[in-house]
Amino acid sequence: MALIAPEVKRFIEGRDHLGWVCTVDSKGMPNVSPRFVLEIGPDWVAWGNSFTNKTFYNMGQNSSVTVGFADYDRRTGYELSGRVELIGSGELFDRVCAKVMAKGFPRANKVSVLTVTQVRNLAK
Image (cartoon, rainbow, N blue to C red; front, side, top):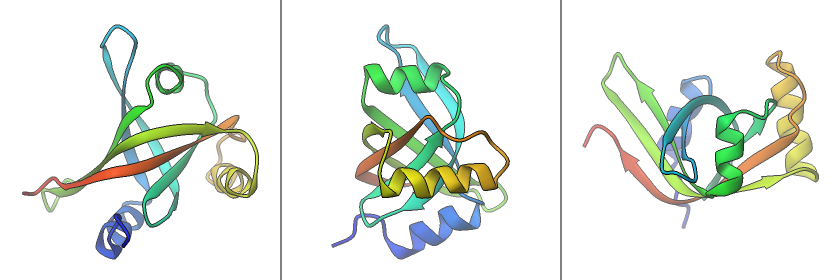
């Protein structure tokens, strides 16, 4: 059974795939950064990392990640949590990189694949 329900997928796609990736560094300091989630599977989501910033480094130190999506007008949204893996090659990597560049960003140096273990409705 898919952990990411069809209505959650539609919600993410309806927000132009823009989510807020939440990470924590080795000292416990949280960080939030916008990312376009460009591929969605039954229990995973993926986004490109064109820049090696704090979020990128945090994911390398601590694979526990949450990505949030919100509709501010309707006061609703979803939070997807799990473990992230950074990949640098393969079919999924190539698809995400193509979509990153189509949005006008540099080619991703790594793609984050979040295996989702929990989906939370922010309106409840």
